[in-house]
Length: 133
Image (cartoon, rainbow, N blue to C red; front, side):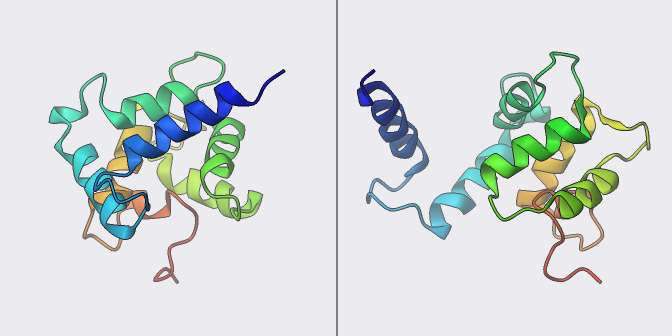
């Protein structure tokens, strides 16, 4: 089987993430992505955060359990340990129900990229934040 299709998809995805078209993914690109997520009106269906939820929710339940969260996050943050992912999940699970609802999941994404509140649960999206005690 040829690697042409996967390479083409990766190139296409990279081009979409490269907001400035300079063939580099920089902090500026990531900041722009964060702002795009935050601008998604009411975080409506079809927003980038909703798309993340659709990918993370492997069993199609409309929620994300700790295992799904870990697998999804490890795909983005290769250095994330299971313990850090579990702690992040616990903090994001605001109602303590053992699953992230769509609202909890989406809020976590939005807060991670946009919140100025050091106590916001979304700060834990990628594991323990560097400023956390």
